[in-house]
Image (tube, rainbow, N blue to C red; front, side):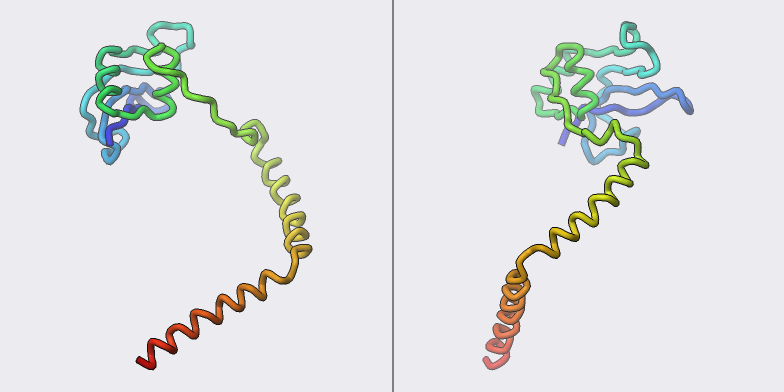
Length: 143
């Protein structure tokens, strides 16, 4: 499957990305089919030198069925080469990690209480299901 994705280059703490078309099985920074542009995340968004794209080749590869990754889709959407992808919903991203862990611990006892309140008929049904497979092998052994 063909992908339009970023291939990392540059030096330590100074990344520069190439926008390439590659088979999804190839390594991220490894073999690719064609270089289609570049992306420099260290430059401000207003600068023209931040992103360089070969729009005709990108349109060609999209027509051939290449799927862009989320980051590349956003870059292409900002440059009007395709529709801007829908924003994801990650409400926990703004919450610091320590607070997320505290909330998870607070929710765990509440879930255990809900399990204790659940009707006790469910385990009986599971026991019946467990008995059924034991009978089937006995019939096969008799044959």
